[in-house]
Every structure is written in C-alpha cells, then in structure tokens.
Length: 262
Image (cartoon, rainbow, N blue to C red; front, side, top):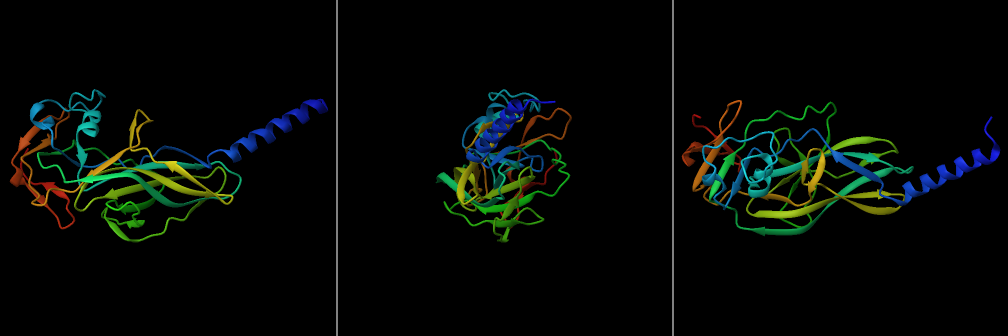
C-alpha cells in the first residue's frame, strides 16, 4: 500500500511535468527516412578539378575530401533540395502544422564552373507515405504546393496537418529554384492551444544529429552549360570522373540527366 503523502507527491510531480510540457515546444523533430537528397550539385570553386579521379568515400565525414560532408559544404544542390523529418506531437491539445516561414533568404546568380552527379543511392524505404509539400523558394513567402508524383512543385496545397498528443508523422519538404542560387532557413509554423510556434527545419544531418539549418539550392546557368562536369562512377567504390558537358541533357523543368558512358 502506498502512503497517501507519497501518492499526492507523485501526482504533483506528474502535474508539474505536464505543465512544463505544455509550456514548451508543441512538437519534437527528428530525422526522417523518405528523402535522401539531390542527385546533382554545382559549384564555382575548383573542388571538382582538384579531386578528379579520386574515390568518393561513402562512409567518411572528412569535408576536405570527396565525401557527403564535402559535397554539402562545397557544392549547391541543382534544381531542388529538401528535407524529411518526423514530427512528434507533445501537447495535450491538438497540434496543427499550418505553414512554413522562410528567413535569411539570400539569392545570387547560379554557379557555372562545375556540376557533379552524385553516387547512386536508394530511397529511404519509409513505411508510411509522408505528408509532402513543395515550395518555389525565390520569394520570402512562397506558397505551399503539392509535391507531384514526378517530384515537381504542383498545384497549391494548404498545410493543415493535425496531430494529437503522441501522434508522429513524417513530413517531407522540397524547395525549388527556377532562376537563382539561394541560401535560406526554414521553420514550420505550428499552432497549439491558440498560440503560434516556429520549429526550425534542419538542413543537414550527421549521424542522425542536426548538422546545420541553412539550406541551399540553385537553378542551372541560363545557357545550362558548365565549364566542367563530373559524375561518380557506378562502381562499388565510386570515383570522380570528368565527362563532356555535352553529355548532359535538360528537361523542361531544369532537371539534368547524364546520357554518356562511364
């Protein structure tokens, strides 16, 4: 039998814990599984030329050599970028994900020195279809749109994702650029019990932990031509191989494809 004073103490502690949860952020965000990143990157540096013929180390985090860390720090995703996150609701009241805010938006002319196609990777293998939205990023207040089946920004689609306490849903956001090279930060706008909150979206992850909050994305040059072009060879241990720029084709949505031999 538990003495009355101990039972009351536990109830008070539980009440305090619940009050603290209600005072805090309405959701927690962790890395999702449905989005693995862009296929093409571009740069105005000599990162490609300096490492031509070198292996692309899929496991290393050394940002000075061809690795995923090197790619994200020295190159910019072409056409689109994005992120997927698991959003877990914490408040007792219904939590509504109802918008997205762009901040620190800075745009310039697209890089034209080098383009690089990354090593092939599989998809995230998510069991449940994530809630998906797409944004054309070149305006500070872009409208949410549907992400179409062929990964394009489609018709307008309001953000109205409702979560009860303990509910978790994966959210995938894609950002597109049509004419400029842009960096920016993004935050989900969340409503809970009459209050508005902003939950920053991580731009990059490292071993399941947030590595940065600044996104980058670029359109191709106006003439869709780069000085040099590189692809990762289709080997177990891929290397950076220089290929002719004329072996890149572009579709009507500014998406590149390499059509030459490796």
